[in-house]
Picture (cartoon, rainbow, N blue to C red):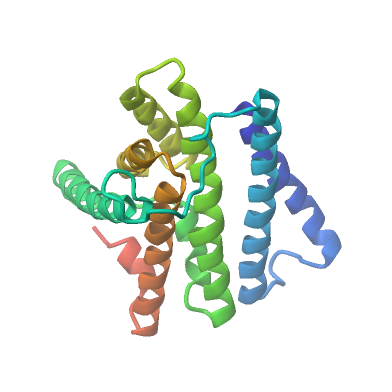
Length: 243
């Protein structure tokens, strides 16, 4: 996990250092170019970090059959169907996170100020053009879920089960997943999402389950905000309602 974090940080720093030499300068980049940079940056990070994960785990070959397993078979199998349990997990996550939001609003006496997380930083790009929309969906709905689920569920959680019971491993990996987003105000929701993602993986032993859940969750948020933008709503106010 230290190697994953270090490779993530170094890849981001390298990208920031290289961009000016490629002609991209702050304040002179169009929205479409920003979206493309976000997508290429996420692609680079995903490739490098997954490469590090597989390089480290490769020394422990042969791996168990249920480690880093991506199996399209039996999507609706009652016991371990990846699409069935992804759907169940999505509905559970939506309900649990909605209830958590209501509880937090009640506890704080109003809507807490949203932090400057990745979604808020992407707001100017949402709905600006079809290119930006495609890049954002590709970034948040494909690359990010593939990276995060492989690292946090396929690698970290699976490793922890060698020393901890599965429920404990799920909770620890969910906490690390939430902390890694560097948004303390969003920790409860991210922790709950990570927990449900973890239990979905434990149920099916198939990374397609949490990846599918994560992909639909992320891309659903982006597509919903694009829809609101097209309808003329101010999505900045939707995400950061005035107190």
